[in-house]
Image (cartoon, rainbow, N blue to C red; front, side, top):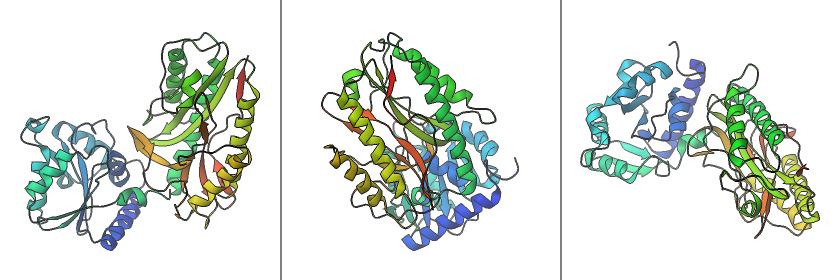
Length: 393
């Protein structure tokens, strides 16, 4: 393939230069990225191989990143990254799920062979797939190196999206809108929950004209009835109720870029308390998006949301938003800024967040979220689905 990944070479070169500048400021010679989203963002690498040890290395003096992974996945790196052969380094297949030896024994050998055995190395201590065993074998294999948490250095570099990334995220928003509207259109009392989820998966992957869909980093979430009092339940094969609530949280995905959305439906005539809560949530989102402009901060957006909730006798204890974009399982959040008190991260054009607007009480909950882009005019919604408690008779 010419170039690397799905973006222009200049896009990847800009990203790498940004990361190296951050490395110098943080005092690292080398960083080891095991977060699959960071691996993809730096090189274009894309494959379902994150269940085994793998990583991308960035060294200040190395022109291109280095992919390190399982031997049978090296062809995937050649197909999706365009990295030079010298920078695609497979580990031995015999090391897969070995109880004593580990792939990072060979990674340590690679680092020493490149002359970096005494480097200041930043690792992703919070990455989902960077296990304690990965770290232990690295430390054991590189006794003269100095290790430190790089505090999600690459994740922070990903926070502001380029125009090319925003184009994919907007397409993801179209796919999400299509999938959510399609699912809601299929929801009726008595329909098994898993049938609705099957419709969601079909719509997510089919995508929209000109933009096919990708798999999401999180499966569809679908709490029903009393289950709506907690946000992260999935579906069952039970029928949808004749009277009661159901919440859908899904994403549209385009080339690994996500736009997430939550909507709440009620079967039958809803109680006034449900309608009032939904109205307050929508009003709170509007207030927050109005402040989602450059120079304002994450906590200011959250404060505007909470002010509306307080006016209506409500409160959300958890954060109300997080960055979204390029993602792999098990999460579509980027683990950097949060829309919550105390987060003074200054908003800049091109940042994308999932405004996770929901309130969960002891016996029910309502969630009506939005993914948005920070712009000079406020938060630009990425999806277009009715912003209300959706009533299905």
